[in-house]
Length: 245
Image 1: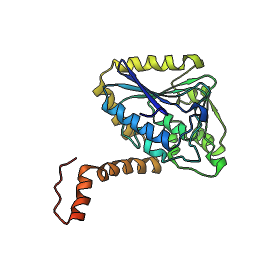
Image 2: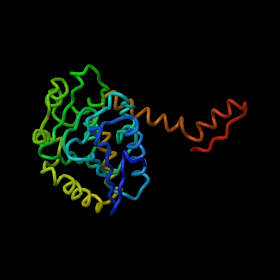
Image 3: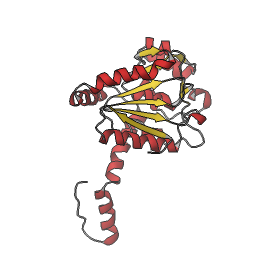
Image 4: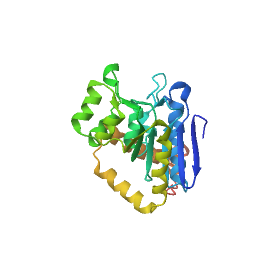
């Protein structure tokens, strides 16, 4: 793990932090690679639940760093990396653009009273489309107001429409997220992972999200030992020996 994404584990709980406060925790290529590695580490670990947060109390994340945004889909949990364990978003301060998709893909969210969501793509002239899945998680017209008008959504409004579980003072965000995490860590992991997988089949997926999931799955095949063996057999003009990994 790099310093730009930190991973702390204690009592079966992982705390994953976007540690780029000097750049408003903006999502660039390095952050993306770090988050992807963090989700993979979480999957392989004995940790039962993860809390995702941003360093500092001013900005959870300013969204994509337009100078080097990377492929946002590739590090989104349950899109670029399958994640069957529960994920809690702990949001202090502004949560902008692509960072909203991170919250969208989390299972629970705790947000500070003074925090806000913002999705300004319609005002900036570009979109990646991942946010379209928001209409499957909050009322359609509320989602369209946020996405098309581009005005901010307060934490209280996000709570009222069901996008946030709890709104608390900023100094209580992590403690409240940890309360959730402690309860989840005591539950049956197989039940939680099964229910999470099942609910992911129930929630409709936008075109970009579906394409990202398919791309992640085909990349696993392409980057596998068998994938390399197939390419090597062509170069070496021999029959391949596949091992199923």
